[in-house]
Length: 181
Image (cartoon, rainbow, N blue to C red; front, side, top):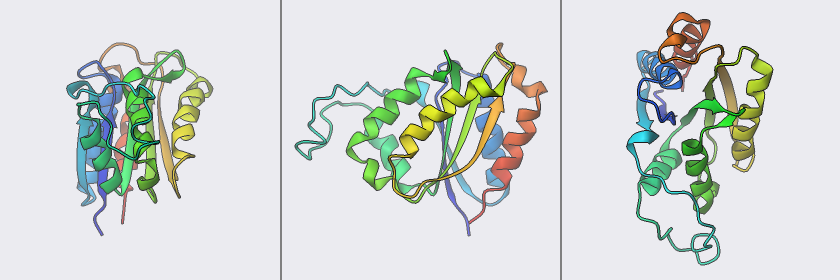
């Protein structure tokens, strides 16, 4: 059975390494018969949560007028969610964190999802990347019945395109290909 795969690429840099891995994951998932959508957050407007309480205390939609509600609706509808980010100071980039924070109003609806994490960084050690994945797990731990299915460590890449010459390319494709209903 085909899965609905939503890939959230958060790099602010067009053609960045985490986006390249996102595209490779999408290619593998599509080849396995899944319906995939790649959302590039840099092409969307997602304001940071202001903590106004309109969504959580009043049960009303967020008063901010941006693309976050549309993206969050896609998260609710997806079977599989891929969170892809470059690593800045051992953390996800601000674009992804802003979207995660905006899920506050509907996080209880983002349930029974399979999650994959993709991260890229200039550093060589995967243990430093775990801080980034732990931050993403902080989000998924708040959800109902999330299933973490895999992490892709794109280490040792700084300049655009460097990830193409690493094992992470094959891992991204293979992980995407492994998505099954």
